[in-house]
Image (cartoon, rainbow, N blue to C red; front, side, top):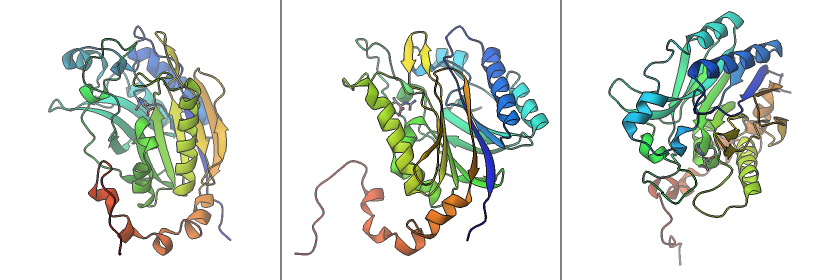
Length: 314
Ligand code: CDV
């Protein structure tokens, strides 16, 4: 019989952040949701990917122009310091996504995990960058993550914080089983992800409803297959007319949705999660040490794209 290990988990979905909205306005909204999360007894609140600005990879511009308008040169900085101060005052941790410009001039799509003392305890730089780097003049909008960001160089790591082993990823990473498995192989009990998912696919005529379907199916399958809780925070609604899906969720290791947003606005969802539920799945169906067969998975790291069939014994 496993003893319950409870943690208050809040996910703070954001409605649109328009081009005209300032960092200060974004931070004020995050602070209001942090207060609400605390009032619901949260230990940790998850904010979206690129939570301080509009989803700027949809706009064609030079890298220099993007850096000037949308990247953070330090974290915390003057504009985000109030969020860190509030976290320390309220004793609540948070996940925050932002565009990072390093002192060497490197650009990453980054998320940080901040503990209850407002210390950054983990940093993750997005590895699976979707989209393109060329200007698609006929597309209704761009998805220029491959132009504005480098592939993350920090790998998938976990941190012990807020009483849990926590791993992070960002948006498109959630669609790749490798992301979550890399975290669960390090004992992650809770995975955090922020996202901006445009409702329209500029590459093929994807029915709009599939965007929500593939988002939820990826998170539910990943939580179950990796015996972990997942907290997923959207930035959503129509940013200057460009619509993105909501569907922020807290998913249990059973694959069931424990809480889900119902709007496309700023909205805090909450669950008093029991980390011990993951232990049950880890001890039985997904007892990795007992049941995994990595000697039969070598293709996963040897190949990037699909190749010819591997010959078995005659
Ligand atoms: N920000 C993202 O990574 N968005 C992608 C879109 C382009 C499909 C996503 O996986 O949601």
